[in-house]
Length: 335
Image (cartoon, rainbow, N blue to C red; front, side, top):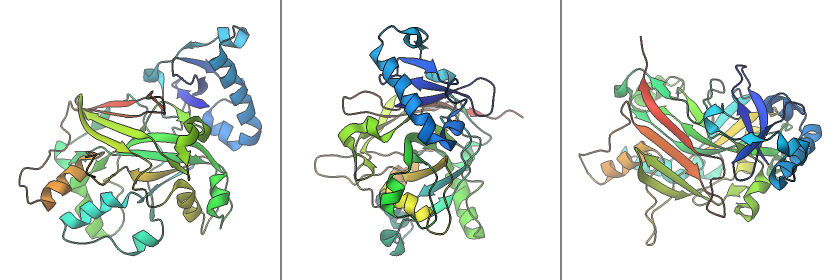
């Protein structure tokens, strides 16, 4: 099923079920007031949401179907505006290989042996069309197209098989990084809080079954497309070059602690190696710059400028938008 949080002026939004083709929606607050509340009692709430979802897709003209309305992504908050916790992994190692190669280094061997995770901000998450508002272009403003999962409750020490059963939803994200603030943050040795100011999400969260056969080995084997100012810059395959799958990431998070329902775990910026048949482009500007640096180029792809718009979407097996698109314009913060 597909779920969204409509902006009703509250912190968590109003829960809605969205049709498979993203054309219509139905308010679900009679079942649960918010997605956050639904995740807290998923075993009881999810079957009710699924029944409404089926009725919405069938469109048989019953009372519930007649109360459906046109779905507008512009009315959406992030599906989960406040996460219980949010963690980012480094599982597309090609992305990090490029970074380290540009710096004359190599990725630590430990990164290939076990998932690497870092805590990131889980509040203030943006909806799909909300502007990216930042103060200075010279911070090196970069987008980052990512896939993430939303977890149910998971006990400490859970195996990847147990973790797989607690993957409730998938999300599409745009994680902003201020690249020119990263070196000083790394030198200080205390995390990237200032360099990771905001993340936005596509309008709907989807259950893994919506991917059909494309949900395989806890990966989403589907194409991701990125455009900047209307120009294609990346066409990538999210299921390829992923060193660790989502079940492994979630299990790694649970190694020393229980995981709370509503935790978001990202796999990091999607990144593919080029092949003879396919040049994937990029899902973050930094990756283009690292390639240029490694090739000795002095003309580097510029970071985002005020007025630039980034568009991120993922297509299902029928070539249709799975999550709805993220489309955001960078705006200058006012005093």
